[in-house]
Image 1: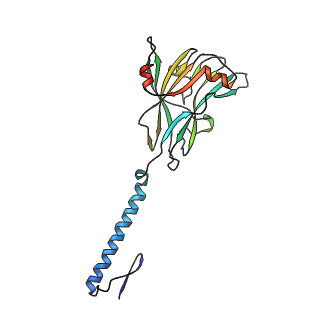
Image 2: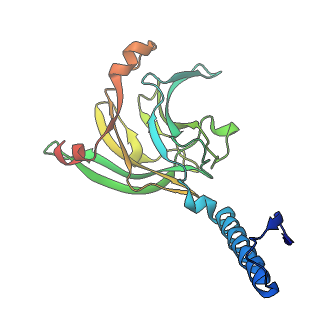
Length: 226
């Protein structure tokens, strides 16, 4: 029995391949199968990022009490943070940004209505030691904003803007913010909404400040119902 050699090794042919032409046809049939398989593997290698699920990003509060920062001049701020979490750690999210898109405030009837639209990127924590658009495999922390012991205001933290008046709370004010997550290989279908209530009372105690500045994730329906 004759044998023909092709790329995967020696391939025996059945005894009924006696005629030389038929034996040659059998060889080319097997070679074409291999060529198709090779092309398929190459296509998978090229398109694997599109064929398998990409990153899945979500935002949550890091904690409810924030972190106190003391300055050499004696002033104090308390910073509050969000965590951006990648629920598919096998797919790294590239160049991640979180952007403020909408701010809602209460009208005379007590319902939240859209007050302003924005496209301002929140800072990563700490901003001085972070890329402005990091890659995220597991999670990373984000500056939401801070309250100052002296000014009694809550101020959101953005790149390139010292203070955005529409995203600032004075004592006894509330707002709902709409945040969008962006990345080169992730598109958020919906915004994330957080309600922030600030009564203006500073506390050094972590457990007490949670009752004075309340930050909670809310559903979009809250905007319509108040």
